[in-house]
Image (tube, rainbow, N blue to C red; front, side, top):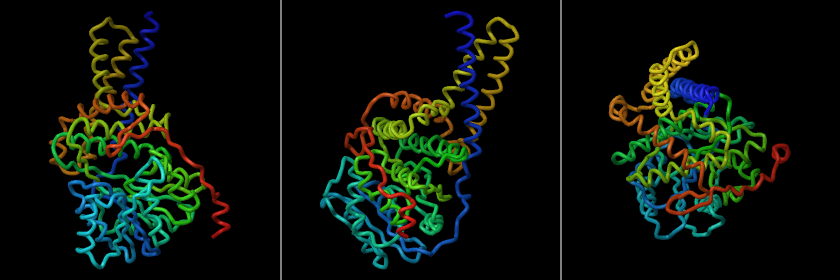
Length: 402
């Protein structure tokens, strides 16, 4: 390699280190402190059908589902769906029905399969029983506060809003690997979404919560449009956007459990997330390379050591100065991001030594996600390719119908 090429490569790596530091700073300030969330109180204007597809049991399934029975909203229907008559989640729903007779709780047991995405097949079967004009989809492993429905559906009063979605904070259930998995969500996924949102991006939709009007669902062709999609949550919101409707990120952050007990299960879950991102947004996936803070800080520190041990000169002085600023600023920003992502002070100190490991593991998963065409989801192997159908109704047609 020539001297010029070597110098160019050095400046390129320095630029990457600086970009990573910039991201860490923005991410640290984009994340809110847990517990300090604004609420929209313009509520009570519509009845809601909540659809929760279930598949098997989870360590805190009853407790998480129970939070939906304690909503302050005056009128809501809870629809739980399973595809097998022997699914162990059925017993959990029966317990809820017995414990909350005042709640409108219905269990749908339907084995019909409509496409490659079994969760969407479940939703298609459940949607036939939904009675209300507002539809809320929510994953089985999330827990919510009593004002969840009130706050989430409020933006739908605006006719220009198509889908309301929620970010989530993770809580580990178990030992070491769930702790790393919770950090994946709290210290990488959620901050990266916040940064994108602050930059004006609205191209997202998260399965933790998707709220929309029935007419919007009909306008995109119903859940049938998503039956062969891996990233069904993303494409639901994307189809609504193609109708000219907005996606709103709710101030609510729901709680989700991370339960993967082994390295293998955690790796497969997070690899699925990354390959899903690659499938729906290749440029965004490529840009994630600047979000792996700790590895870039190490690379910057090693380069700094090499430069300072080499021959001097104006160029080397500039390189050294930039790397010093980048490394120090990036280190403080990464710690601040950890502070702002930690729910309790105990978790901050408890998980602080895991930050370099978490960032390094993420970088390796990103490299693995560059290749491969399949993911593993609830034990089933699925192709990354999203076979989507375009919405069959335009926003003008929806307005004319209304």
